[in-house]
Length: 229
Image (cartoon, rainbow, N blue to C red; front, side):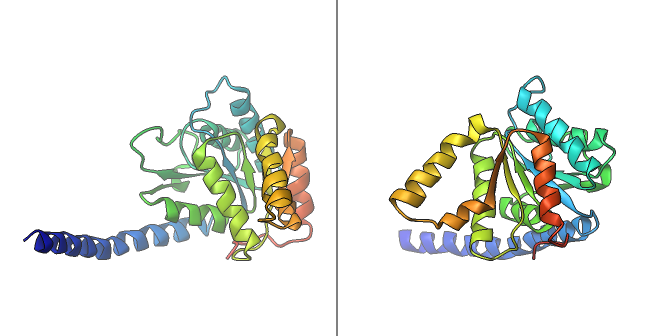
């Protein structure tokens, strides 16, 4: 009897999984249709917990404004903190301001600086991450937590393995990122040889918005602006 109950529960899971495919497809279709119209954009990542009086909130806002003034739009995760700062800067600069919101039990709520026709809602993290990678011409990564690291290392992995074309990955703040970059160089590269030296060429470490615009402009003088796959 216990074995039969286990099998019954497993069959219910399989049925639910099958129907979930249609919801996943719907998120992909809606995302592709809306984001294919936004034009070249740069994604800004960082902590949802960063407050407006924090220096990195203010820097992210200024960076986003410079990005739209340079001719790009801005994509964020649509929530508070650094995401809000990115959308606010884009909004104040009169540029495209996109928010890819995710339904979470805490932290996440959409911010008021997203263009109304460019606010998308996702239930699935993996669908949302596909949208970031496909429609971003660069990643600007501010100080953040596990989610920020997840998005950063997924992008590096996809470029490293040639699943997508190379685009600029820019880490902002030496004081925040220097430790992890040192670990990558001394442990992953030198000690264990788990990466190649050229993999580090994918990453730029900066402290100012001017450096970010210089990197983006230099890269796209040689490369077409287009979706990444």
